[in-house]
Length: 257
Length: 270
Image (tube, rainbow over all chains, first blue to last red; front, top):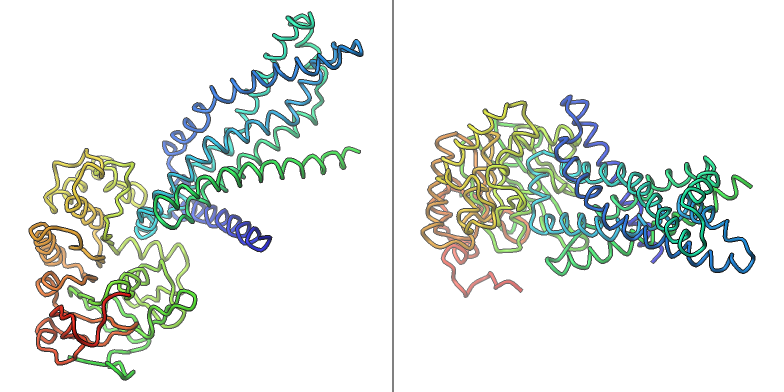
């Protein structure tokens, strides 16, 4: 099993290298953009704009629940004024990127794998290769760029709506005014919390995009193959994101300590 | 007819020498794991020729086309396109070569999320500096060549199998290829549509002077279209010659295959 995992890992890295090479060939030899801006904007619209309702709604409810539960515990110590700090730090450092990553893996990872998988099964990917267009540049390039660049934007929206949820519930449950909450949340954050969260979001975006495209391009065996690959893509992307998150937290904590 | 069945000397095996040939495969070996697909194939196509490669399904005929396109690389042997070795070519040069080759897939392989017009325009947009008007003009012209001009705004799923195949053919033509590869062009089509595709293959090769390599096991179509034939059996080319050579062949395998005889050295697919 470890051997298979390492094989997949090396194949993903190799696919990324080939994608970058195909794109740079296009830039250096043809003096053109690595892929058409319209292709990028289409993917950015689906990945970014299309994910906004889901990400904000889930984050809002999670922020609200978190404030409610942490306030419930802190209240026994008379420390409910710490709720904004807790919500702000938890979301910017950890939950924002993680929740957005999981939702994007489920939403866009599945879509990318299913699309590319269907194209692979129907020989469309091979036909693009046979025409000399470079399927990795054409298909992976815009998708990867979209999910890599828009993931941090979605994380910011997730953080903000989670804080909003916490803010609203804190006013009602713990009588913390909206202004006080906002002020406390901003003051609780250090640059390293925001930077850590942002670096993570880029990384998660890259992981989700690469895993999804890779799983799509290695599909074998018709419709059932596409189904299996899509499931496997979502599971792998979510597991990898959480594993990478853990690793990142250990390294970050060790470096700061 | 050159028949090399049972022995290994291929009279057309000219390593490193090119006689203005469009495609030349020499002693090509290819295996997927333990399964040997090609065991020393040597074959060539001259300019303007329509070479039909016959053979049982699953015998490696389509694999030959993928080797010419550089999508698969052989374990041994050489594959040349116009004297250039495809097997050791880097990605960029290979992509340049591929632009001179049009491939028509068995199931068309049109991009299902794009309209007919967008399918044909894709290689032009990605690989040439042509303006939108020029691209429109080329797309229209190529669709007209295959009598599909009125389908430009349709999605591939709205077309029948035969129509899709014709659009696939038009797509293979947009970059004005010097070589057109056909993978089972008449498989799964009714006799009339199949005959239309055959006529198209002949008229296109005569009109634009491109060389064609056609992989098929439909004998009627093969004899109608071919200027030269080759038979792939057991990973080797066992016979090569003109259609009339094949009609009169005394080779038991060739004669069983072209007459569709159930009894003989060939057995049905396992």
